[in-house]
Amino acid sequence: MDLALRILGVAGIIGATVGLTRFPGFETGNIRYLLIPVFLAGVGVACLRITYGGKSRDIKQICLSSLLSLFVALYVFEWFFAMDKVRLEQNEAFAIAATAKRLGIPNDRRSKFEVIDDLRAKGVDAVPFVPFTFHLQPRDTNGQRISKHWIDDKEILPLNGIGGLRTIVGCNERGNWWTYPGDRFGYNNPDELWDSQHIQIVLVGDSFTHGSCVENDQNVPAVLRTRYPKTINLGWGGTGPLVYLATIREYAALVKPDVVLFMFFEGNDLIGMNKFKENPVLLRYLDGNFKQDLLSHRAELDRRTSDLVTEKRKTEETKGDKETDSYFLDDIDSLFVLRNTRHLLNLRRTKIPTGTLSTKAFIPDYDLFERILAVAKKDVASWGGKLYLVHLPFRPLQGDTYLNDVRSHVQKVTARLSIPVIDIVSHMAAESGLSRSAEQQYFDNRFSHYSEEGYRLVAEAVLSRLERDRVLSGGL
Image (cartoon, rainbow, N blue to C red; front, side, top):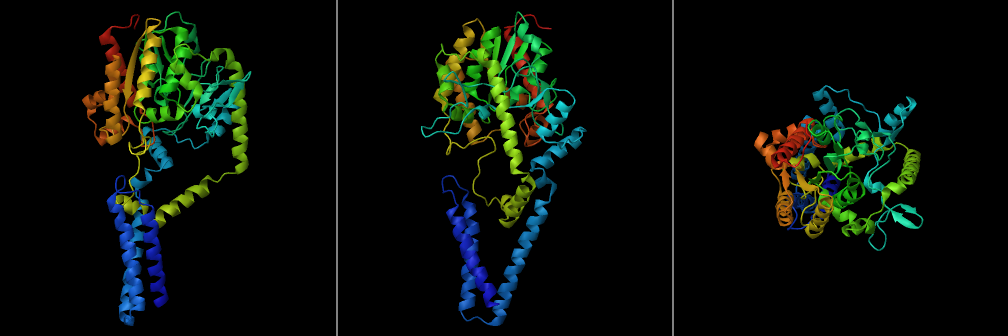
């Protein structure tokens, strides 16, 4: 009995020490997190005092049984809480399965490469979606992230993935895999649009513009085409404002549209911008005369990117499939540290919301953002076009400290530059409020991009503003 109490005492003190060392500080941490190490320290000291304080056997037995009962009760509660469907919904696989069931979609559990292999077996030239960061090397000693692609001793940085009229296999957030027939450059468009004489709208943006991960007739550009058929989608997942500017220079300028929609996603666009400014090629687009002339390197870049994807796949396959073991270890770790119980009691270290960074850990470079918008506006104006910023919201819709700071600064920046803004937050608020139920309406699940309903609202807000401003002709 003495040995058991001593073990509990030492374990309590060690646990308290570990907890205190992990506390992030009074400015950024949840002070209630300290209750856990304080409690453990108290248990540890009490156990050791009882052991070495000459207490009677009855008192020791009562203390030991009480502590064991407490720990058993806590872990039983943790187990049942972890198995609750609300907690399971926070696991991406369960969330996708639940979304598929709600939407009546068969839940396709194949991996991306299994989907690609099945398509190729049917004679379809399928390739994976390649995120922009795939083209960047790790940060070097100078703090720069240069491109993996060099042609004739010159650094060349692609702005999207593999082109050449292939089928692009994207993501699965709602039970079915999102695929689309890529145009000549790999973007999500009917290829014949590039041969049109007059393009009305071009969109630049990230995955929310690209169309992730809904049916191809339900994304924002597709809905816009029902009114303005000559609409080109230059969105690509995993990019940001610097890439949007480069995309305008390299691709939008080819067709000189009447309107360019700069699709700003408040969740991570500024974060991506801070990362991508480590690439010197992207920063050169702030010079109004710089251009990589990517079209002249398109075939070579497609070949090199395909080779890198194949090499990466082989490397991953040699590692073996350790995903199941990883999930198991994560679950055991969560159970051991009572993660769900602490979540319920708000006894956790403060965490940064998914997709965003707190202003304490990350300071957005609003000056750079303003420079990007200023150059983008000038580029679009050079051919007589008009630039709009479409402000896409993230969860929570009602905002938090970081999101509200972003919204305030974006309003100030666009006002100084006289760039019209289409604020989707206000449209969502007007239609159904910014409650939790509204979030469930506009997002398929907590891991997903917008739902079809969310994309529809964005497109209708854009159409309403463009028609009110009368900047386009030739609509249906």
